[in-house]
Length: 478
Image (cartoon, rainbow, N blue to C red):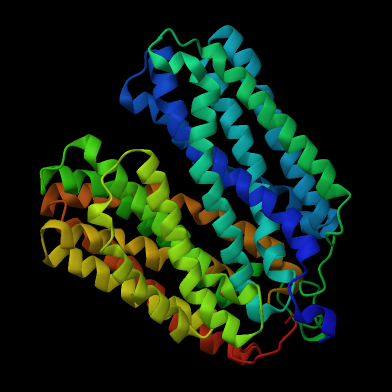
């Protein structure tokens, strides 16, 4: 491995993470659009949820289109046009989606609004297919999952400020009591967003990002391989189910938390928000902690940052809730639970398979604790699942695309398709709760974590057989 590939390439990585920010910004902003559309178009609650369906189903449809185009070309699309061009194209597609908001607002058309969101999501599908493996490739594979964790932290920043900015842009000063909100107020924010997509597309096009990263170019061993598709790699095939179940347990745990706190603990709906906020903040706490190794090789600095980073993120959560005038007293004890995260992170030693195993086991224990206890202990147990889900996406993604070579972008597309697990597992847990109760329904999440732990154990052997060992301190590429 050459020396320049022993460090994260920050000059290329920093422009890349702008797209991670956009994904979080738009996904969280949809929560603002749902009540806006519901009122403006006089929709039922079910009809208003088409916003989420249109956005998330676009990832699966986008992946299918990607495969169809690759099949028609006789070559993988991203391998043909290049990674940088793939990102720029994805941003242009998303920008076209924002343009649909203009005629949709003028004509008062809900279907056209949904078509706009769907098109934005199609662009995101291509961007995710390119950006996730690219983040892993911009430096040594040893710290690939940490780079993806860091990018996830930027995504969390987007989910934090997106709803605030979009809400202000739509309601503005009118939020002080004027409820005559026109659907036309949605036009300008999304046209500005479209302009931002175009600007970033141009900047990325002229950036130093590689079209064909050297860690993704096939090795001699892969060149002589008889494998013609990413699906012939067991690490990817098993990884697809892992992504499906991981996104599922992450979304389902949060989605069912309000119903549990309301029905079992007697919380008022208005008092639940800070706890849901803590769940998503837990993902940020975990990601900031997990990204430490991407910054420095100095072990003593890493040890310090491992304690500083999570409590810095926890501080952000406390500050935001203090500004919102929530009582912070119930949350201080959570600082002790963060120590479990720090210990688990140190025990993983930067190995994505070991981290996936440890965090999956802790996630299952957290859910069992929530099911077996009551009161605030159960709430903190369920909330802490966010800590243990925080680094699972980068771990699974890194393990699943390792060794795929020229099939990496195709494998990435298959993984992006499995984001639909978020909707399906949430619905499954809701269905199960009708039979055995909301608290016991978290057994669905335990089963998800059980498979993730199994995948972590199994994939280590699969990759070692292919000559890939994440415990080696230096390993460039595959």
